[in-house]
Structures are given as structure tokens and as C-alpha cells.
Length: 236
Image (cartoon, rainbow, N blue to C red; front, top):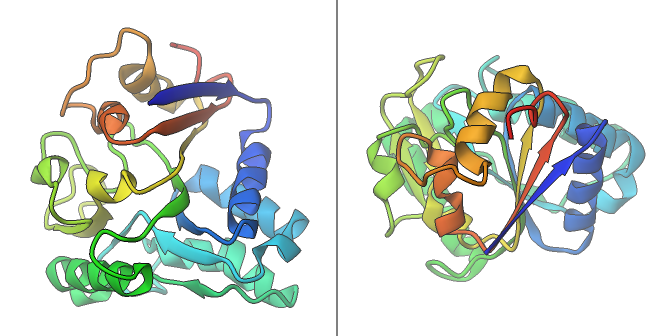
């Protein structure tokens, strides 16, 4: 297990290049929601479109809303990445969205089936890179402090009936079991509002606790890269 902290003047640019490298390798890549990833997706589509041909894309989590809803992570990725790639004449192999509109229970069952089908069996899939954000409460994916999802070890995907942070919409999320199948996990955080959760999760003396889900990554993932701007890194 290793954790590498990278502080950059332009973390979205660094993230865009890391994502583009990962998809060009032919491996499966996990995308996430949030404002910082959106900038990275826009840069990747604008600067590295050709490297996304044949990309195999998944989602870390999504809310149980239709795909065109303003709260949908898929909608954000579609607007910032998939549609610009399409306009550039680049066709990805697939982008498997979470069918959140079917509810947290059915949506989680169907997404796990997709992972098994594409991966070649239960637990067989491997991800070249998983991109994650971090919430103000230290949550990752849609695994919130103290919730049952943090203890799930059998399933790769679970439903979250009650979100631990606004907006309080049911979710579908990958679990630590799924993240353990990633060659690398890249945690992207920018801005002063992320300084406290980053320190709580990744400072040298940070405890591993269910109160800060991101702190538990080190128990499940071999290689973690924490990509920050100076504000997000200010309390490390």
C-alpha cells in the first residue's frame, strides 16, 4: 500500500492527463461526480480526445434520479466529456451508467450484474484507475460516515437508501470491495473547503475510522494518489 500526495497549481490538468493515460491503455476506468472532476473531463475531451477512443467507463456512484436530472452524475459526465468527445468524432467503447431511476435496490443489483458480465464473472473485473472525490464529511463514492455500506465486503455495489449529506437523495455506490479491484485510486480535491476532510483522511497521524470513510481507503487499495491544490493541502 502506498499514498502519494501531489500538490499542483492545476490539479484538473494533471487529472485530465492521468485519466487519458488510463483509458488509452485499454483498461476499465471509474469516473466520479463533482465540480473538480468536471473541469478535468472538459480538459481531457478538449486536449486528449483521440486517446479516449474505445474507452471503457464506469461510475463510482450516482443518485437515484433520471439521467437528465440536474443531480445526476451521468448528466454531468455526459455534458463535460461524452458529448464533447462525440462532437470530436471519438467513440468510446462503452460508458455504463448506474440506472438510479430504478431505485437504490434494483439499481445496485443491475450495476453489479453489469460488472460481473463485462468483467467475466463475479469479482473478476479490474480497473486501471478509479477517480474519486471527497465530501466535506470525508465520504467517498456514496459511502457516508457510520453507514452500513462501509462494512460491505461481499458485494461490489450497494444501494444507499438515505444519503448522509445533502442532497438527501437515495444513491447507488461502489463499495470498498469494488475499489480494491483498482490498480490505482486517484482522489481529487480542490479548494479550502476540502482541507479539513483531506487532513482527516490522509494526514500522517490521521486515524483509520468509519467517521471518515476516505481514511479507510488504505485498508483496501494498493496505490492511492491524492491530487490537491494548495488550498486543499493547507492542513496536511
